[in-house]
Length: 80
Image 1: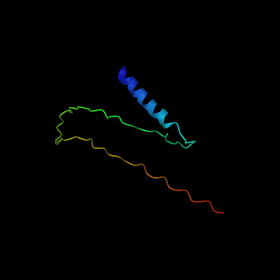
Image 2: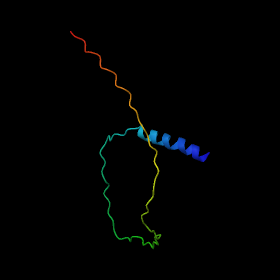
Image 3: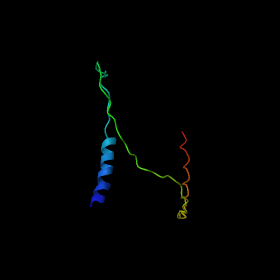
Image 4: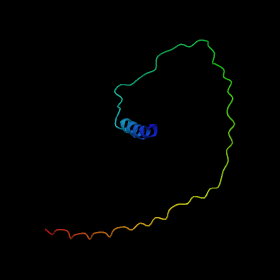
């Protein structure tokens, strides 16, 4: 059920985000601030070990034959 609701929710969200427009009606400006002292926080980060490589794969693709319909002849243009 979760998978079905995912396929309904994601297109609905994309449509709702694409269906709106926004226009700037007033210019903005940054406030005046005075900064004194302070200290940035320190972090101890242990990143995961990631191994990247390549692999050769064989992919079987279907053979698709497409037959285009015959074009309809253009009618002669009307004469005045």
